[in-house]
Image (cartoon, rainbow, N blue to C red; front, side, top):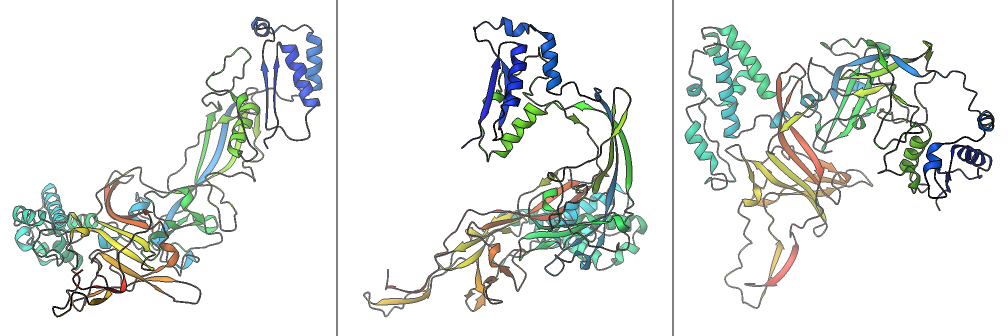
Length: 583
C-alpha cells in the first residue's frame, strides 16, 4: 500500500497560504510521501491566480509569523566556498595471492613508477607479452631497427642475418592448412627484419657481444634498454593475475607514516579499475619498498564561487517563472520501497534550490581528503561547515570489511583510455551436467603466423573402428566417446572435507596426453575452486592493450578480460555405451 499523497490547489496567494497552514496543522500521523502546493483556478479563468491578489496583507504576514517564516537569523546567500584538502599519493603496489590477500603487509611490495598507469602494472601477464607468433616477432624486430635508425646508431652487424626470422612449427597444424597466413608472412618478411623474440631473449640474458663492437655502443645500449622495456612491459609488472581464481588481486599503498592508507582489489576482472573494485585494509602498515616515491601529503586550498545546483526540469524557485511542462513532479506515483524515486521527489520539492555545487579538483593516483569547508555569504561573514559528511550516507567511498568508511575519495591512477586488439587467446570455462564435470574449452589460440586461429577447425578425433569379424547384429561396447582436443577436462577433486575443486586433467590419445596449446591453461597443476565455474560459465580473453601514460609515452601490455559465459554446454562425452556394430 502506497503512502498518502496530498495535492492542494489554490486560486490565489492568500488561499495558498491558508492551505499550507491547514496542511501543517492537519498533517496525518503517517508520513507523507509527497507534498506539493499547486495554484489552480476553480472557475476556469487562470487570470485571478496569475494576478496573485492579496486581500489582507496583514493576515498573510501573521500567518508567515505563525509558521516561523520570519525567524531567519541570517538572510545572506552563499557567494564563495573555501575548501582545504590534501592528497595522499600512491607510493607502492603489490600482487596478492591466497596467503597475502588477508595480510597485504606480507606481500611482495614494489615501488610505484613515475607516470605509470595502474593497468600496465596490475593487468600485465608477461607470458603473453610477445608470444611465438611470426607477426609479433617481426614487428618487435622492425621496431628495434627503426629505433636504432631514429637514434642514428649503427649496430655494426646485420641484425636480420644474425637473428633470422623463421616460421615455428605448430604441432596441431603440421601442413599449415589451419593458418595459411604463416607461410606467406615468412616468405615476405624472412631476411628483411630480425627475429624480435630471439633478439629479446639474447638481450635479456646479458649484453650481446656485437653491442661492444658497434661504432657507438653507448647509444645502442640505451636504445636496447628502451626497446626491451617496450617489448616486455614495465619493470616489476605482472604477477597479479590468478588463473585459479580467474581474477586480478593487488594492493595499493598511499601516503606515508601515520597517514598511510592500504587498499586492496581482490575480485578485479574488468577493463578499468574503479573505486568500487577496492576495499580498505584497515590497520595494515607497510614499509616503503626501496625506490618508492615520497608519500608526503599534497595540501591544496581552493576558493570557488557558490554556483546553485541546477538539473533538468528543476522546480522553479520564483513565483512568476514557468516550469518545464514535460515533468510533473506532483504526479509521481511512489511505493514505500521506491527509495530512489522518493529521495528524488523529496530533494526536488523540499530542498532543490538550497544546494550549491562546489567542484574540487582531485589528484589522480591518490586518496583525496577534505579537511574543512568555509562558506562566505554576501554580507562577508565566513561560516565554517561543522559537519562535512553525513554518517548515514556515503557514495564513492571505499569501505573496510568492518563497514568503516575510509576518510577521502580514492582516485586510482588509471589510464584515460586504452586501445584493445583482437584476442590472441580465448578460453571458455563451463559446466557439463550430462558428464557431471566441467570443461576448459580453448576456443582461440595464437597460430604460427601470430594471428588468432580457432581450435574448433582442427580435425575431430575419429571413433575407434569396429572389429572386422563382428556379426552385424552383435553389440559393440565402447568405454568412452571421443572428445575434441581443445576440450580440456576439469575433474572434480576433494582437497578437504566438504569442498569440491576442479583440477585440470588430460585425455590420452595414442598413449600421449592431450595438452592445451595456449598460455592460459599451461600451468600444471591447475586447480580451480568449485565456485569459480558457475552454471553460466566464464569467458576469459587474452588481449593486447595500448595506452598512454601521463607523461605522453606509450605503453603496451597483454591482459585478460573476464566476462560471464552463455550457460552450460554438452561435450557429448559418455561412458560404458553399447551399440549395434556398423551403426
